[in-house]
Length: 592
Image (cartoon, rainbow, N blue to C red; front, top):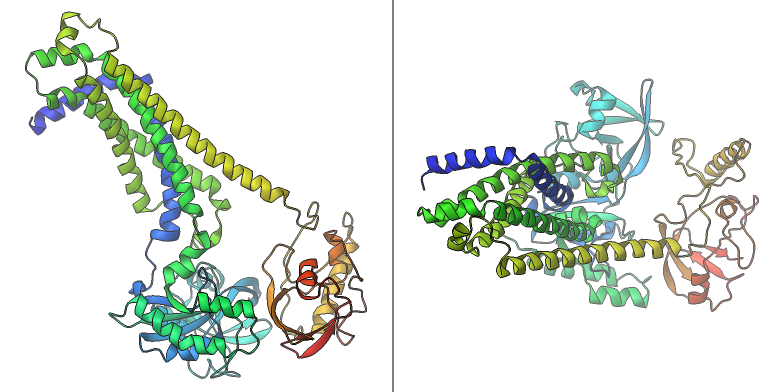
């Protein structure tokens, strides 16, 4: 059949379809819902996992590290020198894994922004040129060197008026004058978005094992990830094992999961989302299949309505392609309109629900459906409509066309059509059961998590961040005094019963610290600093001993509180009065 004949058939089919708006709207709406669900999820997957990184030859970028966990590939400053000595790498840099608040001012403008610490090798290794200015120089990268800052392109636009002349001038950062030396590329992306980069200024040959850094390396051309992993293991394993303050469990973990090299995209960008997005895509796929079955059922009914017309065409010698062309023409229109409707619904859903998406999934951008997602939507819509049309055409082939013509269109459902209908119903019910089971299990998991006793009461508790200027708050006593004043003002406000200050809320990530028990055992403990009364805010009960009081301040006897699990694991249930030597300060802290 020529293209001209097919187009004529298509126009006739579309005119007939438009004369039945109820059927058309129902089919298009059904398809649009399935396409919208899958497109919205695919847009998240594309943005979080599939989209290539903005750095040149990003497939050569890796993280070097690991410390006893297959999921994590974090590094430590002590890994930097061994990583730079690896023969498989071209360049190496280091950056902190998290962003911290920073106070910045320029004239009357003031703001609290997010910042990270990195060395000059970080931007050099990523290979994305700066929009303006330069990277840190060797003197700025050394301890005690000149203070400098590199700003993000977004910060440069909104805070500095997009003025290229600000490069080389000073910003007031934490109360001190700091030279602005560069503006990052607008293409730069990072999971934990930030506005400022400040020099890390590590001591050469440092042995610090903080494990709060990314060691970023660019492999030489032609070097495989497996080769780099073997070299990373050989270079970093001796550094890890030379640490005398290492628990037996940690040592066993390192032996089981030694240091390696992992692709930057997998270890830094894709890791925050885990398998959650793939689970969402599976659920969206079930919705799309249900839409396919519903549309197929509608098209089968539609084929029954025009079976007499098909029988007449067959009697006149029409080929099966000619007989099926009206159905495929209708399917094409439904698929296209359903795709457009799905794109609009997906766009609306992402606009309404995008704020609930964890920002670390989005590389510092807002959630949006890109060109790949639009192509995915149109492809899925046309595929589903075509598959549904094929089922209806298969139904046409099962009709006894001669008997249909003799009966004058009064034949009913055949045995084969009944089997097809039952098959569609069974498939739809099965998919619905799978989808409902997934949703029920997910809801039950959330309910179980909600029911887990956390050991504190969070109702009627409000949290806010406070980022005081570092200038004037270098000493512990200065920080404690400011915390005391803030608490006094809060508790004096109407409607506030209790107030407290802590470095971390109860369920947030903790600070890491090294500690040694009196019997010589070394521990990696997680801790938080908090003010007296903080436990009362969350109604956290004390099982033994006393809470922190106002006299527990800088210069007084050092005290701390520990969890019940810590007591059971390390002190056999008796912790009061025991001593812990804190690794950083080398002081003994009595536990009361």
